[in-house]
Image (cartoon, rainbow, N blue to C red; front, side, top):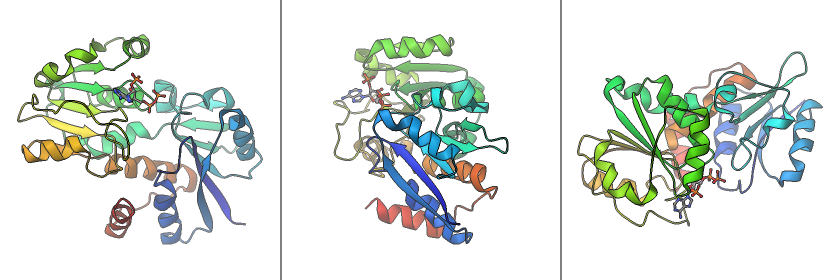
Length: 273
Ligand code: ATR
């Protein structure tokens, strides 16, 4: 019987997860379809029950439900447990609905593995929303020594510090002048998203040797990335992180580690044009 997979979120229309997973289903000749489900919060439980009843074979979870889904799953494992953030769900052999997090792996596999001498690097996460716990934990796993966070709403940084007590919190208004103090800067806000708002300052303050990572992949080049590229600062967009988180989800569901080939990259880039 044809298997069914989905990503749930709200809004979810922008997600490229169906393109990614359906490409791999075709490549590995798996009879399955992956679709978008734009969900109201009241239907979270019902959708998890669909998975329990095997009407769905696996799910990704995106904003704003990465935390909100937790009460409805039977158990959290590994990185999901350590971040309290779930982006992948499956049914295990005992019939338990399991919540896992593949965003942490996504960030590590895509960028952090390239960072040398992490122990002496200082990092700044801009944003304290849904993806931030995974970023903090990935930096911690990579052994980056100094991890700071800044968010427009200060209280959300304080909330994260309850779980990650080593965090150094900065004030939003100090951000432009603080940039010069960091080697790795990660944008985990929604600023820069297609048709959305942008930072209201440029990133002139960044050190020449810094690297800038954007978690946004749509557009593939945010205004900030274009600006920094002009200045010859090393930048990464969110596409690789997106692909690697999907690779690990695919493995959890199908026990196949799918290849990230050129055909896939071309396809994703063409969808982003
Ligand atoms: P949520 O806030 O529901 O977790 P998210 O998409 O995960 O949603 O996070 C959005 C992030 O982008 C937050 O860090 C948000 O800052 P606030 O916590 O202050 O809302 C940030 N963000 C969104 N629009 C912003 C803006 N115009 N200026 C600054 N930060 C913004």
